[in-house]
Amino acid sequence: MFVSVDEKCLRLTDDSGERGVLLGMRCRQCGVHVFGPATFCQSCTSSDLESVELAQQGTLFSYTIVRVPPPGWPGQVPYVLGEVELPEGPHVLAEVIDCDHDALRVGMSVTLALQPVEMEGVANSERVVYKWRPG
Amino acid sequence: MAQFRPGRDVMVVGVGLHAFGRFPEQNLSDLARDAVVDALRDSGVPWSAIPVAYFGHVYYQGMSIGETTLAQLGLTGVPIINVENACSSGSTAFWQAYWGITSGVFDLALAFGAEKVPSGPVTVTAENSPARYIGGDHMMAGYALRMKRYMEETGAPASALAQVSVKARHAASMNPYAHRKETYSVEDVLNSRLIADPLTLYQCCPTSEGGAAAVLCAADALDTYGVDRSRAIRVAAAALTSGNYNGRGSDHSAFSPYRTEPAALQAYEMAGIGPEDVDIAQVHDAATIGELQQIEALHLTPFGEAWRATEEGRTALGGDIPVNTDGGLLAMGHPFGASGIRMVHETVTQLRGEAGPRQVENARVGVAQCSGAGDVTTVHILTR
Image (cartoon, rainbow over all chains, first blue to last red):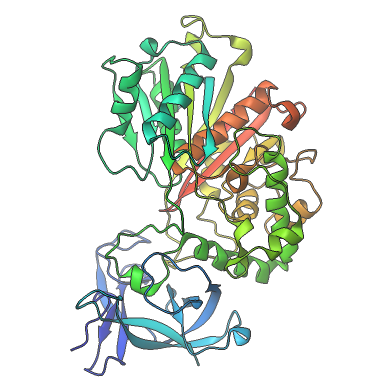
């Protein structure tokens, strides 16, 4: 049984641990989207919000190859951290996987990719994490 | 735009520092106390006359550290407020001290800050946060994202960014309080270890320990407290903002109208001056890219041109807009709670004409800009 890293940001759509959707909120007053949960609109402060599923594909707004990871980083080093712009507007920070570092370009297309991640030595710590993959 | 109504003129009448660096033998209170004693001595005002104190800090695990620190100077019963506002904690304490006086509530106020920042990458979320799985909570990786984007949009070469750090070390080589005083070259900076491409180690501020303090006094009360008028420096503006909606959530853009600029515009309006009147600036250079973005957001150069001004030496000591004249975060180091007040310390020292080999001639208007997580920005304008 796979568990999402953050159920308010990523909903798993089957039991494979590989498929899911990023969640956001859309303001019915001003039309602005945000990634993740919200009670009030960050733009106009309205509380008239609806849950939405965000696009599976976005463009790479910026990226960096992290050589010194933050404390507790459970993945490989170095890793690529990408800031991805979704068509609805929000930017989503996550690891970019399966990529050739030299082929990374600002503006390239990337697609949502899910992977189970475990914190080393921590029981029951496996979570499915959202990442990006070129394409 | 914030609604504000300054009242009495406010002056900085004393500044103090505990050196920045690593001090394993000293605890947070020691660093803070030494800075406070230094500032009180500089002002000539006794601790017993101070009616209120604001203490900026981030990491201390405990309660009422401001109270226990100042208890060492004597228990006077005054209100002491502990302030946490990320890297802007110290400058936020200063901002509160200013408003406490200009509003008419107090004649005097003490703003102080100190920190012992642990080594290693700085994160802002809690240990069990989902962010730890995602890998995006990494202060310097965030700056690297901004840097990549800035270089992409402006064509700034890596060498121009490295020059920011070379300049910082040069200034710090003349500053006995700095954490890192050894000078180096652009090549040294570019060849230092990569932290997060394209950001190298020497383009990241060190995590440091240190303390800073300032004593503020109402301009109309200087004589009451026997303050030396010739060394008093006016606070012409005090602005503090938090994040504003930018439509993106995570935002590491090259130019953001919601980061720093609103506080800068507020401060210029409050001071009745423009960026063309600024003689010196201390800005939040936690990484080299930060300095360029802050310079531009303060309108000291047009957007996208701070890198060129840096290459041309305009932002160095001897240039027409010297920035981070004491070495900045990059060379002074960055004890969060102290940094914002350290910027005030350097500005006051320069405007008094007491900066020794770092002195900028005829400096009359200084800006101190400090950023923090939560898109916090403080901008203070001091004038002689």
